[in-house]
Length: 347
Image 1 (cartoon, rainbow, N blue to C red):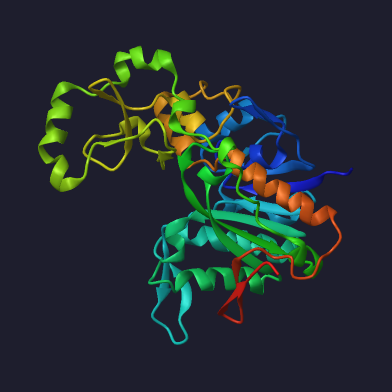
Image 2: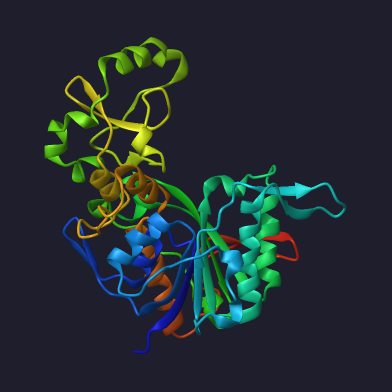
């Protein structure tokens, strides 16, 4: 089978890319190789790029997406990326239009520009749950409409990584777009895995880390947290029997006086090691991070897309592309047609 060629924007350390291509082992389960091939990868963070290039045969380029010369990109069938969303705004115009507050808000339009110019068969975009409510719910329909105006039939769904064998309650919006009506009607979001295949925090804790004094909080930090915990809801200790709360890019500087997830050993509080954080994100233990500092590792890990969740999405895309068309075989998701949200349902 000829592999589907993929161009990856904002690839970070490669969580999304690893999930797309597959061929890795995580917590004793093999995630088989998928018929996708990364032919172009870009990120503007040199440290994430170093991690990426330590783990993939194909290499990531350190580049700002605004500097990409679209006509010099190799041929590709699918565009993927988790574009920054912190800066979207709705400008005060009639009719209102999608705008941006700073340079990060412009990056979404770079993804749209590439889609318009190259017209690949499909795309996948990932973003945080908050994008659905940004600007009082007005921004997201316009974002989806920009994808539609680029020539794509679009669907989206909020997925939780914990539903796919990732030991983390990480919710992300997955947007998919198709050039071909046949592909669009065949697509369905991946089914949740069985309860027996779900993972919890106990599955990824490393016993030797419980003896690493550098991971434990000082008595002073604990006392300060306990003094305000009741009224400020701080010191969020994770249960071993549940998936972890969402980890962030600043785990290296995690504080007890925040909403960051922490772990408790006996009566002592500690943060997660970088390898434990990687496991919480579903990176295999074979994935190399140690060519950069601990702070850079935590940042790269916290910003990544969980590979296992992305693997399940890639399997659905593969099935969609390689199976006969079944009209109306669309999962419960949302699309936007002429700026009007339309609920799509399976049968």
